[in-house]
Image (cartoon, rainbow, N blue to C red; front, side, top):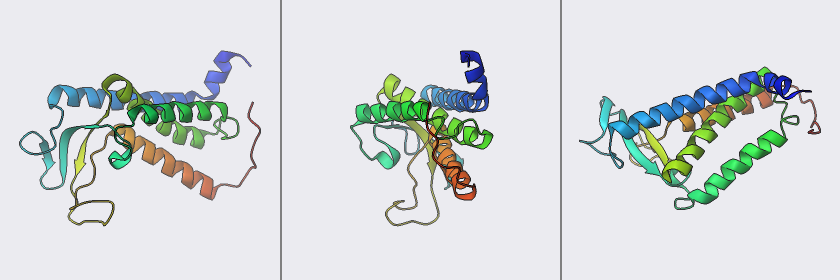
Length: 178
């Protein structure tokens, strides 16, 4: 199988990953030019929907909810390892299936977006800030959800979609990778 035909087999995955990566990086570039780093509170944040949705500029040195803050290098290595594992396990993961390509395209695009931030800025740029009218113990303090970005949304949607596909599809057995 030629390189060109291999790439063609994963066209949907690569297209989705590239679109997500481009949207993520374009939105972060916009935030970099719009707001100074650390614009988490008024008057520096931008109110989109009063009391609910704000645009901010946060540098997250950790993972989700700031976990593992200060360990950005290890998180970058983990991201590279995850991308490498996806590549080598592509046959086992059945990445030629259109639905699975969609899920992994979302996941890969998001991982690449946040990895790019870690390499270029030393942190991930988060800018979507949601305030909820209620508080959920252990997850949301005072009704404020941690800031996030396009890549984060894409990763969560991709993982959730893959879980749904896996839960509602017939098991085909673990395939040997090539």
